[in-house]
Amino acid sequence: MEVDFGDYGFCPLCKTVNLKEAAVCRSCGKEVAMKPISDLKPGGTAGCLIMIFGIILLFIGFTGSFPLSMLGIAILLIGSGISNYEGNKVKILENELKKQAIALFESTTGAQLEAATQAESKGMEAVRSGRFADALSHLEDAVQLGKTNPYTRFMLAVSYYNAGQYASAIPIFEELNHAQESSQEYRNLALVPELLARSYMGAGISNEEQTRYLLDFMGKSGPKLRNAIVMNLAKHFEETHAYDDTAKSIILEAIELDPKAPVHRGAIAELLLARNDAHLAYEYCHSLSVEEHNDYSIKQYARVLTALNEYGEQAIQVYERHLASEPLDTDSRLRLAQAYIRQRQFAMAIQTYRVGLEHDPDNIQLRYHLALTNMVANRLDDAIAELQAIMRIEDFESYKSKDDILRLLGRCFAKKGMLETALKLYLQANRSEETLDLLYDLGKEFERAGDNRNARTCWEEIFATDVRFRDVALKIS
Image (cartoon, rainbow, N blue to C red; front, side, top):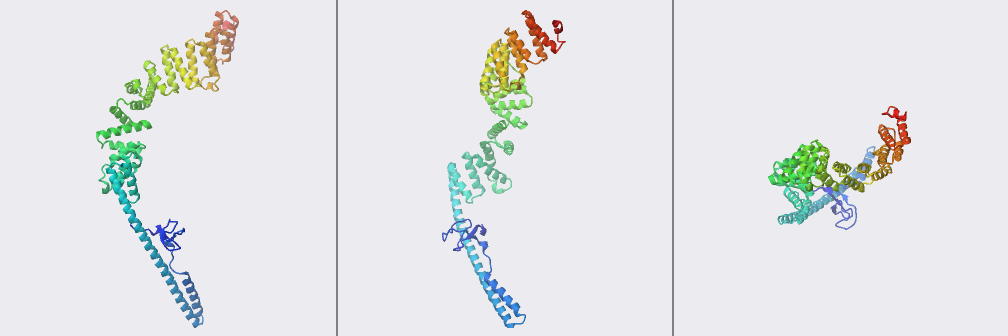
């Protein structure tokens, strides 16, 4: 190794060489800024000034004074001698400082090399004994002190790997693996490609480059390692939801390796749903019982049943299991309630809505459907209470208009026999065809009850909006 004199400086007080960053001189002990050796300038200022004075006298002598010319020559020679002396003195000092720098470099390098060799030896012994934490400490020191040969760095990476510090092992294995392609010096490290693959898996696959490496390395691996790569790639694709054809083939292979793992079946279902193949997704979900699914796969199962518009007993089990882990999934809760309603289990449907509202009290959609279900189940007071609660929510019209709520309230009161209250509510709604239909039906109810005055109010309201609505013109006349 050659000395870089730029790394050294000298103490301006005692002329001792130190490292240029040193704050205190190692000889005199003074705190002083080190001067770079390159700051030494050959030649002397006094000699130069005397030479200039001699040249001036010589020039004046040429104009007619021979003695003055001779004095100028003499002074010029004296100045030259002084300048040469000062220059030689600086050169001697510079050479001396460089000798000091070389000696300091050699003493430092020798001690450093000895320390590096000792650290390397201790590290290798620790590796052989399986003491990888100790090996790390020694081999890190060895590399830092200059032991950067491929084998030492390889053993450092191996120690990181065995200590579970995969992220630290990866850059060393990557460097060695790349160097293997071009240098004979590295080709005896045959385990590097496999250890790099295992490090990627240990740390967790984090980017596309690592994914490509593992996909390529699968073809060079034995069955056990290949299976491990498949499972880790499947996990990576499932976590990133990067579902392309490669991901599909890997996940299907993972299902073959572990048929009961719900996460793989959930992933393939998600992938197939994205490709509008809900029927095949159903086959993968249905092959496990509801109890065998985890939260992720049961969610995909619920999505599959939604896509297939299923509302049977199986759908009830799946939605219940899914909502246990995601109670705020409004769409699944509405579908579960609908499944109960189709089986005429109104109490279960109502309970489903109420549980949802416990988690999300201002959910207008759930409260509206709870009101509808109460009305269908003839729990009219409960239906009215829910509709009135909706109208107290500030932005309820983001889901249903005030006219819709008024009409539904009117229907509830009409079913309770409170016809005049129903009429008041209908009259507050707009005059859409739906409102006119309700007013017409209410008018007939008033007629049957012998209340011709309120019946006529209904006909007149309809007539004022649409004179050709059904037979209202005849009723008015």
